[in-house]
Length: 372
Image (cartoon, rainbow, N blue to C red; front, side, top):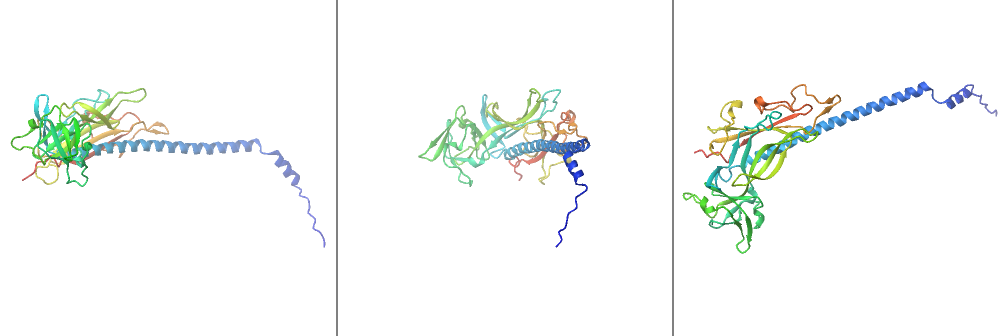
């Protein structure tokens, strides 16, 4: 058997020399250039994705914060007047009456001339319906005794915290109502009641002799609150802004005792009012003309008031960015689309910011006088 002999490869030495030689300068530069291009493309994609994500977060935050604030205001307005459209209270000058909802049309710029907007403000009673109680004894000059109302499915137990710090008692038979600030709460275990101590107010003086409030009347824990926009001065590189706040007020003097920020970077807050005198479920008038700036005040309260339209204009908390720097809106987008709240005082947001206009209509079901 013959053994097959392998012939030597004539190109073998050349291949060996080439493998030992490595890459040429041209090949090295070409490979490095391609690597740099690929890394640059990846970096550009990552930076663009980061800008898009940041912009989306700013837009989403502005939208969600504005909607949450609008729902808060709408819920409070919808419940306004649950215990009566008007209530009596004791002021420094004696017995006074106040509507359950007070409106102040904006007359003062936030900070002229840079922020000429003139936001509206609202004062109303916030009800805590799930902790309402029943009057179990005759009213006295210094004490109100209450027990849990067994009608609601979420009726609280007999405990002093049925009324909490900062809350007052709205005592109502739904024909007459009185607002009584509470200074102390004590549990009467033997009678299973909560005794509310009244200081500086005399419930007997608030009684209406024609329709007196008697045992069995409903007692709501309430707070007198105000919604308004406050100006915040610039600090360092942070520009000036305005915030929509909820203030807890002293029920007698309406002086603020506590403040909570509902939405930051608010540009305007407007409330318009409409009527439904023919009871067809639609605001009287046509289109935008159905709503006016004439709302409930201390001296003007129309029991036929039916609808309120709340509008809130807010902007992003920081500038949006693009690959060319600050984002510039070339045309009206769905994010900016909405009502022109400030009229002649309307101005575009600062460069790089975006604006969001939100609006909702509230049915004032507790303020509408019953139709016979």
